[in-house]
Image (cartoon, rainbow over all chains, first blue to last red):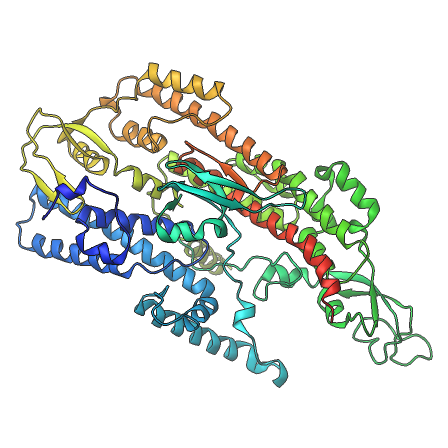
Length: 224
Length: 214
Length: 185
């Protein structure tokens, strides 16, 4: 367990370049944050594949070590429990993403298609393969149970139109991690005027996801 | 617990959600219309017996009751084959009732897709569209508190009386509130960690036993 | 989110235990724990404390706020204020349930504590409903909800956000109704 003094200093950095210097404890925290954000956001967030890989590495390393210890040791039991807890979080995170892929697959694939070169993908390579396969299976299924029995001019269904988009206008609860100034709140009705709010560190808010989506991505706010 | 099947919710706007069962049922609801031109060869399809001497033709001016999806398909502002009347629940007299006290209306009997169907009516340009849309929104706001309170207070009791007067959208909302409450109560009593047989398995067993009896 | 998942998060909170065994410092992925010496207090995450307690390997020291007098103050304050008052822990409900269920003999006046926490909870949930109703009625675009805890958000949150989503769509209809007429060409 290398540099534990780094544990106290600084917040858990989320950006990929800094991943190298994260302590294992910070790594677990950033997995937890990714998990919670993913659970509460209406759309599929950017894949944290690097965090996932690092956590897996840690778990495998630990499990490897545990194999070499003798059974029945109190210490081993405690390590096993911790490993189980981290695995739960990891699985729940990945499962939550798969569920969103199943729910929004045509839109997620469309976004992936139009992604500019160099721009990070929302999907991990495995998730991309899953989404493509899911789409293909869905199309085959629809054709075999319904569409092929229809008159020829009605045999096409545009899945992009048929499957609802993620609702970015939905409301979310959030806690502010880094103070933000001048967030523009759009009016709900014609009689209201738009106004500007500051998000104080540590404060909590209920607001439209669209308004703060970039802040979720940057890690400045956490969804709750 | 994660569920295997995620139903697609209603579109609640000008367009239905293609894969929403609720919307499919909603668009089957009948809408009062009037034929603005003679509609040849459609009497059988639209469920009207042919008038004497007209063959299979619907004469101009005939009053019709046709499903929403068909009305949407036939409606065309340029060719004007069809004009659409507002169902009475969306008309002015009822709008006044709603604005007085939205809570007294039995939306299940009058609906049961009051919000979804009402939103769809905006596809047909009636001069009253703005008022209709406004009433629907205000009705929802007006009934919100009662739905919230009843769904968050009723624990472990028969809720059929509580939802009897709710429209389908409100019922789904009521269920969401109940789920929040039930999940919490179960957790508080320490029941979440108990693994129970899936309802599918339980029903399967029941069926098997009755099969044996029979 | 499942209440069990909120509980999972609460289990990461640190509590003090008095172990009856010795064990060297232990290097977990999430940080170091120990060393453990019989009779000497040491801080561990609640998930470990509960496990050790169930195996009768430790005694759990009640959290500093699990005290009838303090909780009475908190409850009275909560009843007096219109806004949500700060709770002693963001997981006060989960911690109370876990500790009272698994280590009640280590906590003096457990039943009174349970009642006080429940009363505070009920007051807060009633407030939450009141603010949800006014949020909907005023058709607000933003609300500040400091001190609301995860478990509270979870019991009433799905209902509220779902209602707000419906409302948003119904409001969008107000405009699409008008534009549909002009877009007809």
